[in-house]
Structures are given as C-alpha cells and as structure tokens.
Length: 341
Image 1: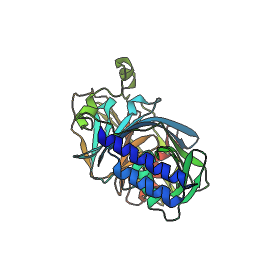
Image 2 (image 1 turned 180 degrees about the vertical axis):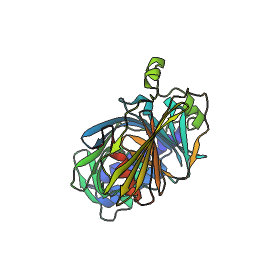
Image 3 (image 1 turned 90 degrees about the vertical axis):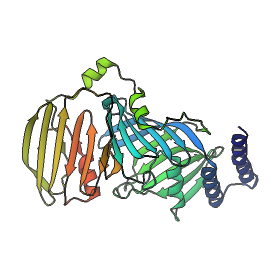
Image 4 (image 1 turned 135 degrees about the horizontal axis):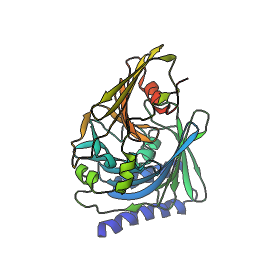
C-alpha cells in the first residue's frame, strides 16, 4: 500500500512541477511519460475501438489488463459477432490468441506487442513517440497531443496517428490512426485507468481464460451460431492483377471446404472451411510460427507466405509465394460474402 502511495505521489509531483513551470515542453512530457511507464506495476482499463473497413464501421469493446513486466490480456468483443470475440494473452509461456466461444487457441512464437504499433496498449503508444524523432506536439486545455509515425511493418497504408494523453494522469485518452489521405481509419477511446491493480494468480492463464465464461453467450445463441455447411462463399475485391481461375468444393465428414484459385500477375489460393463439431472441454493451443495480425475485426496468424483467420464460424486460409505480406493482408481484409463478378 505504501509503495502505491509513493508511486502515485511521484506522478502527481512531476505533473505539479510541469504546471509550475508554465506550459509543458515536448521534452518534459516525453520524459515524464517514460518515467511513468518505468514505475508502472499494473493497470486495467476499458476502451472502445472503431475500425473503418471499406464502407462498414466495426465497433469493439476492449478490456485491457497489464502486469509488469510482460503480462498482457486484451479482450476484444464485437457485439455483432459474439462468437468471434477474442483474447490476446501474453504470459510466461508465450503469446496466445484465444476464441473462448469456440474453445480455439493459437500459440505464437512472437515478440508481440513490441514488434509493431498496438493502438490500444499504453506501452506501445509511448514507444511510438520515443521512436519518432520528428513527432509533433501540442497542448490543449486537457490533453498533451502527439502526432507520430506508426510502426506497422507490413501495412504502410496507415502511416500516422494522433495520441491524446490526459494531463493529470498521463494515461492515453484518445488515439486516431490516419490513412495516407489523412482520413481517420481507426479510433480508440479509453476510459480512466485503474493503476496498481492486484490480479489473481491465474488471471493470465490460458485455460482459465478459455473456460471462465468471460464472454457469456446463452446456449440457444450458441446453437444458432454453430457453423453451417451451406455457408456463402466469400471473395476478395483486391486481387493484384489476378483473376479467379478455379473453384473447388469438398464435402468433409463434418463440414465443407471451398478452395478458390487465383492466377495472373500474382497467384494465390484461398481456402474457406466450416466444421460442425461439438465444443470440447479442453483443447491444446495450435502452434504457429507466425505473428498476430488484425484482419478486419478478427485476429489471425500471419507468416511470410500465408494468413489464417476465422470470422463468423468460417475458417480462412490464404497462401501465396508471390504476394508480399502487406498484399496478403489487403486481400484478406477485402473478403466479402458476395458473388464473384
């Protein structure tokens, strides 16, 4: 308890020092942000994230938890697709993406979240500021505002972001991510942070998060959401000079598989599959050598030549030795349930 009081006192003291010297400089705020993270032991907060995907806007409720120095739990829930609600988890065993409603999990050999910008993580936002020598800075009545470059290694279509920090707590309040035409594509709004939170021993455990009923979905809703073998095939609108050359459909013992083959300037293949299997009590995480990547409103696994993801009960797999990683992401994000023209 005493340590918590001391830490909060230091933060407040640093803010008073800034206020006492007139309007804060960029260097002073950056220094205090860095020190705040150094002293931070844990936090918990909620956020709302809006993503503009094509003509549609996806909205997510996010529950964020952090414990020093490498434990993270990010719960992402889309009200329109409860079955697809996911958890990004980092603990001593690695990085995991969990889909509790389907009892599915992937385990990554990854240095997430430090390998790229994460617009909903406090540490990532401050890191982007520290790594941008040309970051812009301004002070409003309530916020310190930074405009920086993003660090999306395989997606250069979202080059800049604006980050608003509350002047009193130095925690993020708002993040806006812009495309190359300076349109806001992603917006994250945070609730106040609860600092120095004490979590239960198994709070960041994989099995606990898969089976604790974090996403409460009634049984009758689950039955309605089970994958159906007569699903509508989805097609990409971004094809990089290739055209659909073959469609193959297969009946599985407990589902259906569709394989789309695209040939032309850059060949690639898309597999779509559903299985009507009953949920099991426990399932070991599937290993992947890839990295977590956002595909629209879901989180997939990306390697140099493939992307795997699930959306509304359908499992997708895109593979190509000719598309770049950024191009694969663009193809995957353009998938829509419409007839191929």
